[in-house]
Length: 367
Ligand SMILES: Nc1ncnc2c1ncn2[C@@H]1O[C@H](COP(=O)(O)OP(=O)(O)OP(=O)(O)O)[C@@H](O)[C@H]1O
Image 1 (cartoon, rainbow, N blue to C red):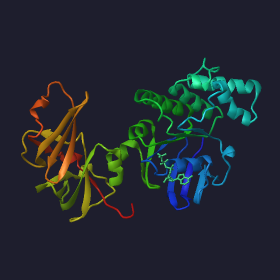
Image 2: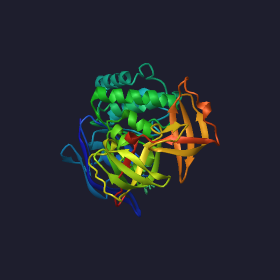
Image 3: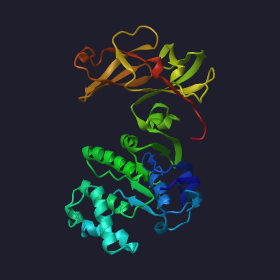
Image 4: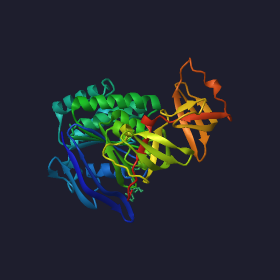
């Protein structure tokens, strides 16, 4: 087991700053994910953990040991690559044996280790198959077995599920999480898929353009995004700009671009480490499932709009509603007893914004 620390780490490739002054600390046995859009520096960060790249600036520690410039072979990390990087004409057994042979492990010890790990990833019986004769999901298990057979202190996973179909991704990510906890191994996972990141991770770092925007548990990131980028990247949100009008012990009122009347946000919903001032400009977030579609627009936080689109996907209904200056997305669970046909595309449809679901994002410089 190992802790991993990045201290002021940057990585430049000529003019490109792939990783820009990144700091984080990963605990023993933690499942930690680097999440962000394509090109944000996830893979470069992971490669600096593995030792495939050395930082241009800053330091990397495993526990208290400075490993910044240590060669990959001396780090005891196991890596699963996006394309698995297996030898297609070799058997499953030979692929897994490779890393052990490099480490001069032979004979019965090697054999026992290979059968142990095959068991672990539920691939016993496949040892003599060639990689080219396996399905994508099975190849993924072999790649995982190959990374685990050396008993690494840290398991590194670079989009390991991206070649699997949606259903298999779900079950495999659940298994991966179980296995990681069972082994108590520290894992660092790279993905651009928010759902995948949330379902496997203890904590997630959200990156953009080489910088970390937020490191938190999945629920904290979802409910309390640090900035507008994080909220937008996670999706399933409505965002608008507002100005703080009044603040009392219970509520913050906001002047908004889509209504003459002020909107009320409950203070209980806000991050306790942020304070807001009268006239402060903020970004406001409300999750698509927290907005309510209503027939009549009466009273506080009700606004009148027009239904642009409605779509049923089996579990939820999605509605797009247009009001002055803002287009909204509303997602509601389907209930057989609720009649959604009352909402007709092109006709009036109103929204209710529950005060306890309105989240204010503090603006900050430099990100
Ligand atoms: N070897 C390299 N030489 C030059 N530029 C590079 C190199 N590797 C990465 N980059 C650049 O650094 C930035 C970060 O790349 P990185 O591969 O870390 O992103 P990523 O978040 O993993 O993206 P993806 O999800 O697309 O794999 C990108 O702009 C990329 O073009």
